[in-house]
Length: 324
Image (cartoon, rainbow, N blue to C red):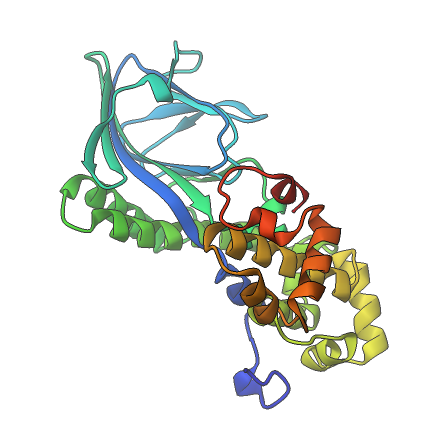
């Protein structure tokens, strides 16, 4: 167990990095799209996030609540909630739904699409990515329907990462899907970090809390060690402030009490472990610091409306997932 109260060398200097460790990508697929004018693709709403990168040529994006906007080579778009949108050679083009378009597999979860007419060519890298359930914490809930970075933005590394993705998706080398997953992890994390940094004016809510020198340390500790027997006193020690100051400041910035935040985070984790990893109820209870399986089951049912055994091993939507 890490000692948060010892010397400065052991302290989480960057709380956001601690939380971003939970941002794990699953259920991913990647494709190279070679499109010749005229063309238009409709992307319906889906549970997974969408990610588009313009390799060459240009195109138009019909963005949620923003209408049509032109994209140039080097531009990258992330739709973290899988919001419906469209890509086309021009604004208002005739559309085909992505699910009805032919895809040629290049390997495991990697495909190629060739569509359109005989006009000018645009090449895109298009990805669908899911986030492992623990990452569904307030940061993702707060994100807008779309993040757009023009030409790599202010991140000097992003263009190189995107170029590597473009090369990997067409190389047909062994392990391409694995490399693409790692690259997508880094690209998406850097995009989210840039978005967090752009919200420096926020003074309330989760983003303000994770940037706060005191509350951010406590949030990072909760995310890293959810099974610890955290109390207001121990979290105040992590934050290096008094109990009363910590409790008041936490509630003021985050909008809930430390105990409720901790409970909600534990239920998020339990949901993922039971559904995706088929962890036993007993093991989940032990990892989350409950004294007994019965105590954990009661807490889970109060929060989700069903016992944890109902969720275990299921991959379809349930009332428990809806509550979580």
